[in-house]
Amino acid sequence: MTAEAPRGAEAPAELVQLLTPEGERVEHPDYDIDLTHEEIRGLYRDLVLVRRVDLEAVALQRQGELGLWASLLGQEAAQIGSGRALTDADMAFPTYREHGVAWCRGVDPVNLLGMFRGVNHGGWDPAEHNFHLYTIVIGSQTLHAVGYAMGVQRDGAEAATIVYFGDGATSQGDVNESFIWASVFNAPIVFFCQNNQWAISEPLEKQSRIPLYRRASGFGFPGIRVDGNDVLACLAVTRKALADARSGQGPMLIEAFTYRMGAHTTSDDPTRYRVASELEAWKLKDPIERVRAYMFKNQIADQDFFDAVDAEADELGKDVRKRCLALPDPEPLAIFDHVYAEPHRLMDEERAEFAAYLEGFEG
Image (cartoon, rainbow, N blue to C red; front, side, top):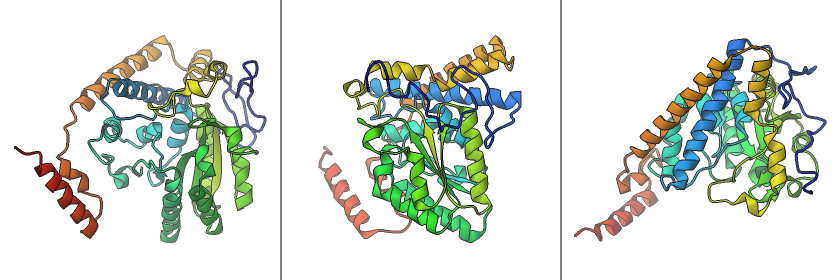
């Protein structure tokens, strides 16, 4: 890679795309979608509001109010497109970066911040939102998701499961094991890989010698690569994959070809391992700007609409900040609550040891 030819400067030929970076609508023979103007405006609003929450969270971390934050900047279309493809019955298993999917599933953004602030274990009920708790261990949620999908299959429910992971996770044993189980049991699951080009500081070419979506064929199920910065394409591809899973056609791997515009987490410095020209090339593919350009060209929205969304985003950012700062610190021993459903001997011993430690600070 050189400054003259940054990674991602040219879109891969095998990419499903419905909306170009310039905001031009294109057709695809297998994946197309017919949305009303109201639905397109809704997708744009999702993209803008989720980015605003993300930017506020980064600012809060920089100011010492969060211990850590994993930004989704640049990946909004992959998450909103796939998230809006889910039905109420479908179940989603995230990593720790799926703030956009959480938004689509009705999870309060402040609950996301609470986890990174260290005041709760997650803060939402997975069963209420059909959105599992964030998973920090890389790739382990894929096994959880396949197990859940096999349960759905045995219950005869008309539902599918989707699990999110990054390009780096495809090198984990858990992910490959989950591919095997899903394939052999024809589980109703969609594997959604957000290929943001960098597994922390390792580029994609150190993860795989072939496009990631082609790995699926080795496990016996289909794979496809979609423009991860195209919210329409992500919605169309994911919607079809989920429908196929619900109808008994088994698993599918979607590789959303996108880019992490920010750091891996706020503890990371991406300037140490990637060049500025690469970032600039991907700025031209911004998922929000292409939808905005499309809406302007086709008179789907006027300036008043865009101004109103921006104003709503600013109010959302203020509200998230205010409520995050007001989150109460939990009682220290509360960390042991809700870990196991039933009494657990080791947990009881650790609780007693920690209580004795705290008592040592009392005057």
